[in-house]
Length: 206
Image 1 (cartoon, rainbow, N blue to C red):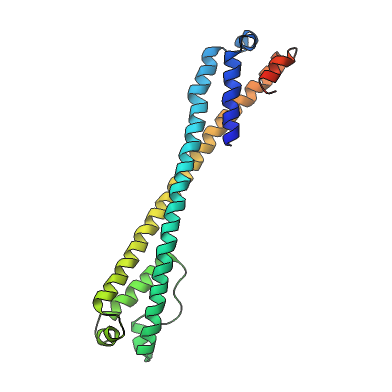
Image 2: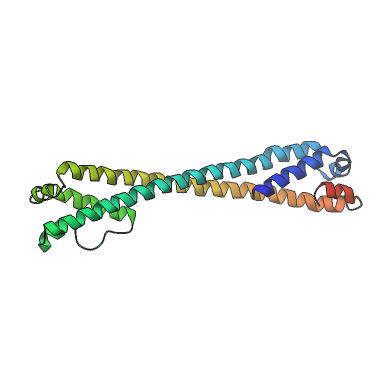
């Protein structure tokens, strides 16, 4: 797409700056003012759309990378916590209260809900004393809960970045299509108008 945008600009500039081409194309509605307007509007919009989408995709990639790293760490921490808690509490009722049954959800939002509930339960009697002995004092659990909140924040940022990237893609595609349609019509008119001038068609890359 970048090449197409650059080629369109070159086509329009050549048609505008070549006096011989202008002499033949201006009567067809492609005078210098029209070509300048095409550059100022359609090409500028297409280039701006392309640039904005590139930036948006970079932001999205960065947001996803940060989220993935944080999510991986919190899942590892929670897996450690669950193993230690299961070793410490064998009764089904305790394990149910601590949310130790089953596997951690793959979905980020569900994982955050599950892990938050489990950690929060671990801060309350009758589990606090035993878990503190096993390295999960309330302060330690609070740190884990902060980690989960960070993941939630990163997930929101990634979601916002995805939305922005999708919007930027739609805008880019619309602007690129408008430019493509304009140049396609210009080429058809030029091909017919300049059919006896292969040198001029060659200058236009046709």
